Every structure is written in C-alpha cells, then in structure tokens.
Image (cartoon, rainbow, N blue to C red; front, top):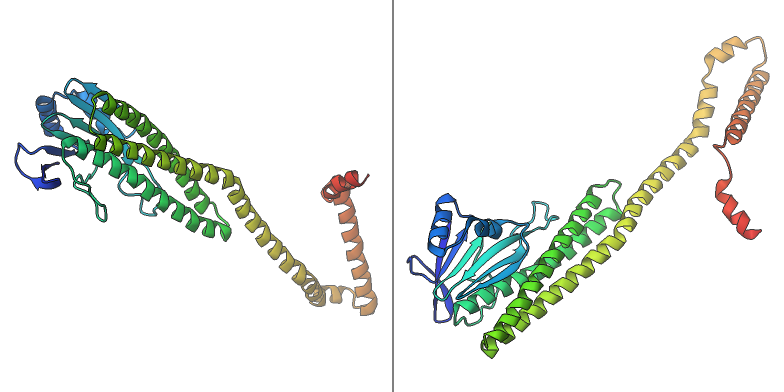
Length: 323
C-alpha cells in the first residue's frame, strides 16, 4: 500500500501526485517492489532488510542519498496486552524525496496528542520520525510497567503458572526493546557525526542531540525494568509455590479436624463387628478394638520412622548450630 505526503508550510499533508515529496510504502507487494527497485535504485536485499524485524539498525551514506534502517515498537501488542515486539522500517532520503518502507501500518504525519515541530526540509521530517518512534518506546515501557503491576497482583493470589508465563513474555519483550534501542543509539551516533561533518545547522544538530538523549533515557529505563523483572522472577515463582503450600496446609488442617470425627463415626457404625462380638460385652469388645487400632498405628509410625519417612532432619541444622 502506498501513501503520499507533501511538505507544505512546515506541515505534512496527504497528496495524490506522483511528484509528492514523501512516499510511504506499507508492506509493498511484488508490483510495488519492482517500482521501488526501478525508481529508487534499491536492490532486493535492501528492500528485504527494511521489512525484516530481525534486521539490525544501520545507516549508509552514498553520495547524495542516505539510507537508514530503524527499529521501532510494533503497533499493537497481543489481545491480552502482555507481549511486545519490535519491527524495522527503512528510510531513504535524497535531495528530492523521502521514501519510507514499513512492514505494518505507519503514520508519517504525526500521531494523536503529539506536538509536531515546524518541518523545513525532508531531513527534518526524517528526524521527526526517528524522534516520534523513540518516544513510542517510552509509551510502551509505561504500558509494560502497568501490565507488570497487574500481573504482580494476580500472581500474589495465583496457584497456576499462567500469569508467571505472561511475566516471562514481558521480560522477553524488554530484551527485544533493549537490543533495538541500543542499535538505534549506534545509528544516532553516526548521524550526529554526519551532521558535524556536513556542517548542518545548529537547529538540526540540537535536534539530533535531543534524539540521542531521548534514546539513552529509553535504553536506561528498559534496562532497569529488565533487571528488576529478572531479579524478581524467582521470587514470583516462589510466591506461587508458597500459595500452593498454604492451600495444602489448609486442606491438611481440615483433614486433621475431621479425621477423629470420621474415626468415631466409623467405629460407631460397625454393625458387622457388633454382630461378630455379640457374645462379648460391648464395652470390652470396643475397648479391645481401640487398643488394637492404637497398637497398629504405633507400629506403622515406628516403621515409617525407621524407614526414614518421619525423620527429624529439619531440626538437625539447628541442633548442629547450638552445639
């Protein structure tokens, strides 16, 4: 899909003319790829690199043209909002035209709530796109922080691994963000050196400096989040295990409470035993039965203790320390 824009009075306006200054190709098909190769002298490798989500950010200078591959956050997370990824866009800047190649929907004319500065040249437009996509990382990082908080509240009361797996997905998304932001930082460094070499205006140089600062802040913030998530991952897993242990403990307590009651009810309902011992007074018969049960229980406990199932290993370290 092709979208065209024209730079007029510092603003980007939609255009239909073939002579428009800015062309945005979104997931170009075979026919559009041929147009790109013929009109802009782009080979198939370059086109594939601009659409490859695993391509590393880079910038190339060739006479009067500049080609840049930039990493930006994917437009939409999954339906649950707990998965984040990055995609690539390609930007080709010449004296007459700015070409943008993206694998998914890309809005070149600004986004809702964004303050667009005055754009005086195609180079300014390219810098604005880089700045806006860098700002998108901050928005996604805020979303990740909010999602992590929601997951933490659910993990605190969870007995399953579902929310822990979602937290792993957030951590994985942060790794992608860190790699992409770091690669973008290398591109901005080269762009900064290019601005000094070409003696570009002080306004452009300051804007690139702001870009570097914004990208550095994104990198540090995403690194901090990733470190915190990784450090607390084991703790979150222990929370789920502790919740399960508490549940088992409560169920065991309920069983202990009702076990004597079940025993009494069972003994009282032994009509077959009463029939078999009708020649013996019932107080003696039931007393003998109780003694036999206690003896059997004691023998079972002694056997389990001798087999190592009821050892006092938990008290051994404390006893050694006291010694």
